[in-house]
Image (cartoon, rainbow over all chains, first blue to last red):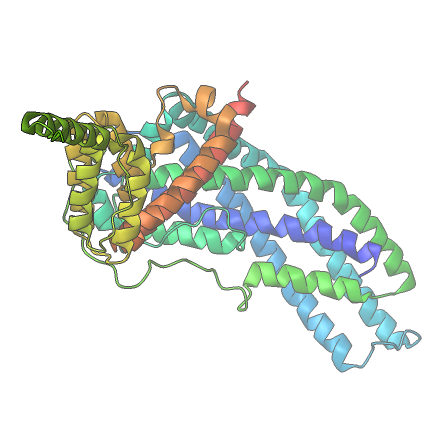
Length: 288
Length: 183
């Protein structure tokens, strides 16, 4: 991939990540709300307020913005896909002097520019909502876990009560920021919240942390993406005037499609418990 | 010719002195504090208890390690109880403080991490030492692998400890980032 292609790739790929994340967040936020409402008040465990209504509302709004962006991009990408297929079927690769192929290349370039424009239009709003959510979570994490908890109480919160542990056994497990695709990780959040019902603070702490770190990363990516979009647009406008379709552009579109519509090869890996587990009944008087 | 006969009483006194000398020399010999030779955990614990009560208390940590190695040869859930009772015995005999006994037990046989002991809040205490805390937890996780998995066959317990380590790592990363942003 040449420099232009790399820049285009860098410009588009990060921008689509937030859209997928935040669509997942929409579902997540509603479930989190339901979870908070359904959770029985427990006198024994301290309750941490990591997802107050404002945060859930921020998440919902962010999810809406992301969904709008994703919907717009899906349509454009679908069109790009068709044009690209036509270009290949017409054996236009290498036939730069053919006028029909040049016309096709310009059409593809125009659609590509449309994609960049949609992103350019939507990103500021998304940046704003992502930052709002990130700041709300940041404040709650700092107050609830950073200042109100010692490392030991944090651990006890994460471990939860014995009852919570038993009910949690069938739940999917979060593996932290393990490098898997973001959309897959949020799918796991969704499953965790959806299948475990009214679980305690331990999952909320992990969930809030994971969302916060993703939001932080997303904010940075959006910022960088916005800087790159102007450059990418200019480059494609130049390409338009010459009627060139670069292989890099096709690669970029392929990358965007993978992110938006999924990639069968990269299944999320979730570690399972070692085989042959033994039921434990003994509890030492020394145990803490 | 004069017959020089040694008086019988002198022979008796000399014999007693030699015996006393032998007894005294035996008593002042340092105990060997050997590693228990048996592969049976219960027998090994008895042997260790005897040694500890006979001047080998300074070798407590080595004995504990020896017992873990022996238990690894015959892993079973009941081993947890054996170790707990041994540590309670050591506390009763004044060889360990209650806190030391808890540390020895929980480090190997509990899901929770003793490395996370601390009385100050996370922003002020844990975050500035985050790398050390995580490093200590990582080492403790190895001990839990030994105690929970290889000695007690408590696979679920070890799996939960491993998961807890990752959760703490994640939550601390987010929390410490939030703490530093609030300064």
